Amino acid sequence: MVKKIFLIFLIGIFFIFIAINFRVQIAMSIIPILINFTNPVAVNENITWPDGPESNSQSINDRKPNIILILADDLGFNDVSLYNGGAGDGNLQTPNIDRIGKGGVTFTNGYAASASCSPSRASIMTGRYSTRFGFEFTPFYRFGYTLMKWMDPTFDPLISQFKDASEENFLDEDYVGMPASEITIAEILKQEGYYNAHIGKWHLGGIKGQNPIEQGFDDSLQLLSPLYLPKNDPDVVNAKTSATIDKMVWASSQYAVRFNGGKAFEPGGYITDYYSKEAVKVIEKNKNRPFFLYLGHFAPHNPMQSLKNDFDYFHHLNNDDQHNLRVYSGMLRALDRGIGDILNALEQNNLTENTLIIFSSDNGGANYLELSDINNPYRGWKLTHFEGGMHVPFMAKWPKKIKSGQIFDYPIHQNDILPTIATAAEAPIPTDRVIDGKNLFPYLKNNIPPHENLFWRQGRLQTVLQNQWKLIRDKNIDKKWLYHLKNDPTEKVNLALLNPSKVSELEALLDNHNLEQKEPNMESVIATPILIDKHTGQKYAEGDEYTYWDN
Image (tube, rainbow, N blue to C red):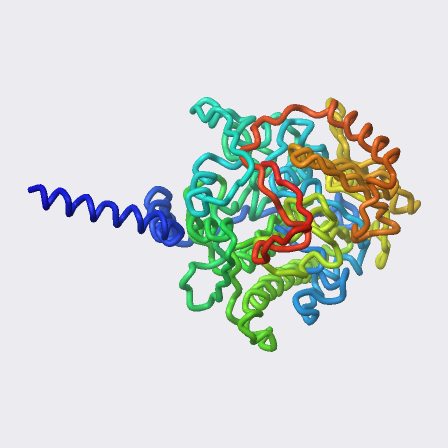
């Protein structure tokens, strides 16, 4: 009996040892089973978008414009060939995305509203700094944090502060997502008779009035989990990195969408192509009435998955160390192809002239893709306030109102999207709250700057841009960076110690701005360092600069 107990004890010790030393492999094996069991996904369903009118007595050019907002996810500045000549290794072109800028206006200094996804999307939908209504962080729950910590004990080396995780707090609308009291673009346009469709990523909450249908959209085909195709699909080529967040995404993702809040089901193919094809259906069904289409593409966010045909297209990237770049390039090719399909559908239905298209990304390229050049020529990544994290592709096309081939060099902000769209639709902009964005049309016409000051805040990482002067301060490490972007657009020379009076002046602006913002609805749960000039696959060396990401 004693021997048996001792043997069981030794076996237990052995399995504990295995669990500790192989936690990542265990997580990657067990978590998908648990998720698929608790969140079953049905087979693909054919989406039936409602039919618009069969005809319209008004010509397309006499009625309110159609509006299409296309938002890529984690798209780097270097990923669009119009800006930097060629993404990937320099051979990847994005001719269809480029068509938007060439056919209208290319903003050379377009800024995301945040260096991370959810706050940016909240600002885009409302025209307001998301900090005005407490939506400062991307919701990140205890399970996700615990999983990442278990898979990689070095994750979060600084702090772990959880808000009280009671059921009441987890179900409170201000904790889970964007407050339902905020007024979205879709709600504004709905009052003007627009049909509103959402496709793709939402990421602004799903309960108590926060889902797309309750925020003004008539129909919503929503991303539920980020796989582009099942992991073992014969038509997909996968790429993985050493980053903990990449491992977590692979372990916890499903191949799933839902329509109008219904049950989860599998998309109809590679999701980038699937969303684009569904967007074309929306256009064709609604060609005889004004529509607003918000296409929240997931590409090129991780997990990195390319269609084999797109992967094969970049056959010159055939070295082992180019595999991930080749997969990523295939993802961008699919994104560009889909945008081409949308532009072609507008042309085929004679809608091009009176359709306003706006294209941007929610933030810059991510360091955990472990690709060095996605944000060139800028320093930094998603989650940082250096230009690589927030200086994003941004362009608009409306042949009826925007002269083709324009270049606009003054800084603009994603807060500007709502008032610009509302003005195009001749819709009233809310007057019961501060709208931080500007209608861009008069500034384009007169070629003058829309903003005197722009601000960003994510916890203790805070930034102000005024008249080409940019100050970043990180209160986690009590460090400040000061740049004059006209003279130093790639932020190479920190002038903070050389110009303390300018630092004080900009800090005063930032402090006054903060006084107008609301306290966060959710507390930061992590603060983790992000190397500015290296991705997660490159080791820290003495002297490397970094900032902390609060979330």
